[in-house]
Length: 564
Image 1 (tube, one colour):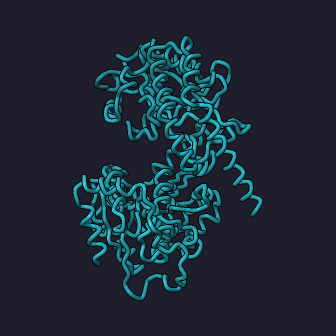
Image 2 (cartoon, rainbow, N blue to C red; image 1 turned 30 degrees about the horizontal axis):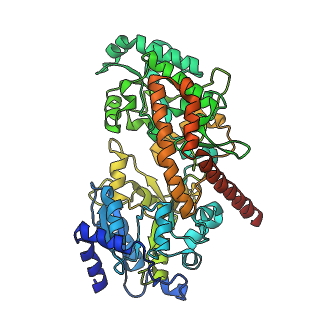
Image 3 (cartoon, helix red, strand yellow; image 1 turned 135 degrees about the horizontal axis):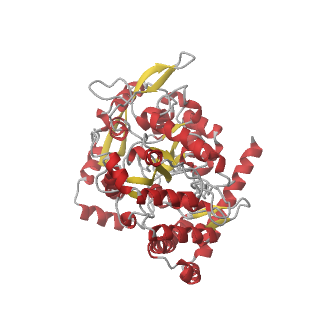
């Protein structure tokens, strides 16, 4: 280990007070750009395996339940053998990573070559680039990263999404496709799961309208004693539960049958078919949907704890089989997928039936700020070429989920062959094992790309994801009527700051009133003053910013299509 890396590791272990003081002192300074952003290193010099051993240094994170030494992981052991590049890791526990990362980046002149699991927001990327702490990488991608370049050529929207407003690319992305467009697995997060076992016992059909759902919930309530006795339910029947304003656990999807049919989304924005960005909590349909949910509260159909409970409480009640209807990404996280079915899109009182897709879902799973190189990177050509190995079609699925052939361990994959006889990673049957725990023990995450065309060629689909995707398509695809979702845009640092402030004020207020109105009522009386207060907080300017970037994104897609 050279002196520079020893110095870096020692500095990381200094007191937090000293590190914070150093960070404050350096925040206003612009780093000198030492790393080469367009090196003249021949591509042949970074062909793997290297003739002579080389070394790079990276910061990363790992779950507390897994090894904190990345070089103990089979994936990185194999990667070192394949490339002849040793990685000197500084690893932080995942739940402490954000703070530790920021402190580490405050150590000017003692930075690692890069951050593998960088976890950087758009604001982080722009401010660290402005300070000269991280470097632009677009030239490195074009020259030394054929695997990532192939992804960008196949899906040019990803290059667009990675490009900052100043024209530079500052990071290497994480991409996970499972379907695309309306068929993407991310299209719907807050899926409502209804207890089919209870329906069958009571002789009821799966409801298809809001009125029918209300009657089913009433039946669950009125026949609670019978259900508890028949199915040995401890704690009592709960007709419907959720966690308000909690992403996939929120009941917003039920409001899509009211008014205009936009319902609500996780970030509360939607786009009309005319390309106009709207704020869902200001629409008439939202108001009507809230009034209906409040009616369910007055009829004792909603869990009183739905407005205060945390995830652990929500799950505990689910594991005791108490729910008639609940909301989550995957019902297996709450109860089991044998007793429940996905509740289809409900037709509202005026005949409206629609499913509003999640924003950012058009391009599937995407994390812009997954991996970065710092201005202290000693060999950017080598670093880029090494990172590009993570984008190899047979490598990305392993980094994302886990690997094969690891002795004395439960493996995610076995190495198999596809229809053409090529290598293919086949998902193992995990049995009673927790997919999350097994994946955390083997996966390394970081920059990668798992594309739709890889399935059944390089890797099989995960069983849990395939189950969700197939059922989601059957239940919802025909009712996804909206043309657009809001895309994953890259805003300027000034607009990012504005949006952050607007989110603090506007989103907080809208979500507070949403919970209050569902629980206590009063939306009709307070509606006009509520709209005025949102405007006072800056909603109209917020919408203008969102509209500007939506329009710009659409134009960039059009120009890309014309260039093909």
